[in-house]
Length: 221
Image 1 (spheres, rainbow, N blue to C red):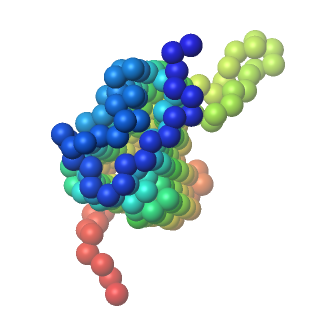
Image 2 (image 1 turned 180 degrees about the vertical axis):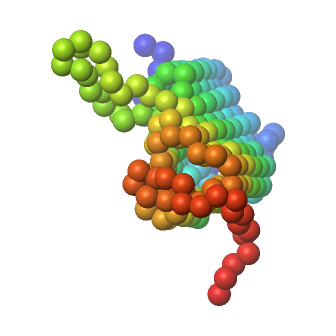
């Protein structure tokens, strides 16, 4: 099989497009047609099993992000001025999957994005603010079935987080979530459906607590 077996690549410190890329990156790029277009300050570890995957990263600061891919023809795009704090991870499991993080989005620490099952996606808009211990998932990871019909009941669904969304600590953004522009998701919430713009959302499962709200990044001391 044409796969890379648990191949780990670590790029420390400043990595610019056109710089001297390690032999391991060249191996991943040319032999297995995995494409790297990366420019960031910090470090990322890559653990890739597959071919035809495209990674494009143009972030300001990344603190030891772990990227794990199992599959083919997937795309990871991290756009400009993104800040990713410690102990964050991005997993892609399947084929034809896409994860996109928009400009000026920030992750404090301990955030996990997992896009799993073929042709699903996680799309995060511009200027979103992720606090800590946040999970975003497109799949339950294991199937369950109707006993009588034998049909699977828990299919994967993509996740969309629109521009300028603030997600507080310990939230779970589960499959099928569509978070409207300008929303706030309160601590310890779990979302699984579509929510309109500029709402305060909270609870497990999350519901709209208040409408017509707005938030800013200014810090309160």
